[in-house]
Image (cartoon, rainbow, N blue to C red; front, side):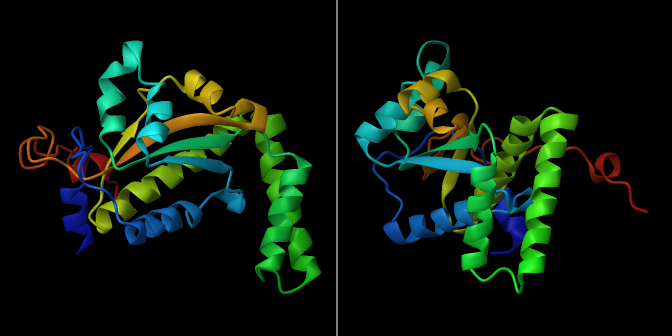
Length: 219
């Protein structure tokens, strides 16, 4: 499938078919999309809670009550639901863990380059920690990059998706003890397959984007 076709057929799915499940083979590809996403300095500041059982999805859906109840069904009817979480800090232990994992994977031809990468990653992290004072926000940006990567990737293998910020992230943090473990929920994405009755399919609700002349400056 060409990229243009993928972009036009993907959309924010509003109604999932609860009878259809993503195959284990396809979901392995989803997990690969999550693991292999790019991030600034390869900092990988994320964790993913994956729910594919009724009980698991019900735990995530605790964050879709009250004001957010319009998203409860979109969680419960989906095949899989993923909570995207961001680190709340990147301390020295984590930086060393990243470095040694990369070294084990054969990323560094010699110790000089290994230490150079370690120093550079810390420079950028400390820039956001001390100068811009937005370290957690910077790490959340990397999580959103991961989300965009996954949304396009799952569309390429015929899986529908709905990214949601309309969930009580504080309740999600509490439900999964995220803050105690150095993380906080950023967003939830439901995955599965659209129903024929979904009002938001591109056939029923055509996509609308600003024109090229307005958004591109070609030099």
